[in-house]
Image (cartoon, rainbow, N blue to C red; front, side, top):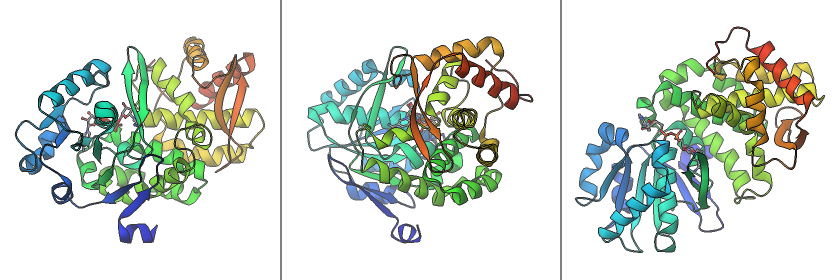
Amino acid sequence: MVDMLMSKKLLIKSRLKNYEVSFVDGLAEPIKASVKRGDFLFIDEKVDKLYGEKLRGLFAEGSIIALDASEQNKTIDNCYRLIESLIEKNIRKNNTIFALGGGVIEDIAGFISSVIYRGIDWIFCPTTLLAQADSCIGSKTSINMGKYKNLLGSFYPPSKVFIDTDFLKSLPQKELKSGIGEMLHFFLIDGNKRLAETLMADYNDLLSSPGDLKEYIIASLKIKKEIIEIDELDRGERNLFNYGHTFGHAIETVTGYAINHGQAVTMGMDIANYLSLKLGYIDKKAFDDMHKILDKNIPDFKLEEDHIDDYLKTLSRDKKNIGKELGCILTKGHGKMMRMQIPMDGKLKSIIKSYFEESGSHAEDIS
Ligand SMILES: NC(=O)c1ccc[n+]([C@@H]2O[C@H](COP(=O)([O-])OP(=O)(O)OC[C@H]3O[C@@H](n4cnc5c(N)ncnc54)[C@H](O)[C@@H]3O)[C@@H](O)[C@H]2O)c1
């Protein structure tokens, strides 16, 4: 990690093209060094208001496109309109789309770049913790279709990533907690107990000085890099990253997205660990050890008994299921994750029910 901090660069190998993640102090210089005549900037509206001024002079008039970072904008219709406007403005095959924002702007820019002229370059400058510590590498670009999230997409990496952790200073706390959830998930999968414990020991300090998260962002990216370089297309090893996600997605769905993604994943990991305990893969001490790490980032939420069936129904629709079995990642302890198929039967229901009875006794029901 020290080497990485000194060089401030991480090379990611991809089947399409290798790309570099660079940690920078300010974006004006690195963008100035990469931008060409006719390039475009897609920028999150909020980020534009806060930081856009410094970048105005780097792009031609009409080439900066400010976008609302909402899920409703991650659609084929919106992408169609944007592509139409890029074509009208004469974008060429050798032009680059710069994207400045979180995962929503990343998905829109990455998806459009992957299809326009069968692929043009794009450069990503992530401004949320989730995008800096996770989504900026891995090549996935996804847009929503109707009620289905991330249904359409491609594997299409950016040609460069510039990370400036100063952007995190304006990020709302719930977005920071969401990013922390994703980082925790990497540290638990990797078995890096020390990092997970120090991250959570410094939790409150880091929420008030998020610029200090850099070491953890680098560590997360290094863990992700190792796996995506073996299985970029998510056909094998990369499935491990679903740890916490199967149970977490279902929490997001049954609460109508009232809980942010990373905190739902944190609770999802706790549920996966609880299931692992009840199925005899780990002992109580291992569960408690991991629970202690996750605890502060678990949302204050309890699924009432009436909603357990909705939750199970949502789990039953997960795309990783085979037949009537739930495809999920369970654990034999820190760093020992395993892919499993669990029968969706009364036993699973009673374990999920007892998880919420035991863990949620002080939490409020927002379902
Ligand atoms: N492509 C991938 O690999 C991948 C991976 C994970 C998630 N995603 C997608 O990413 C999206 C979530 O992205 P996200 O969590 O990065 O957040 P986001 O893009 O949804 O942004 C969250 C909020 O933070 C604001 N914001 C962004 N940067 C800011 C800053 N520096 N200061 C103040 N406000 C700022 C945004 O305007 C928005 O209101 C989802 O659509 C998800 O599906 C994609």
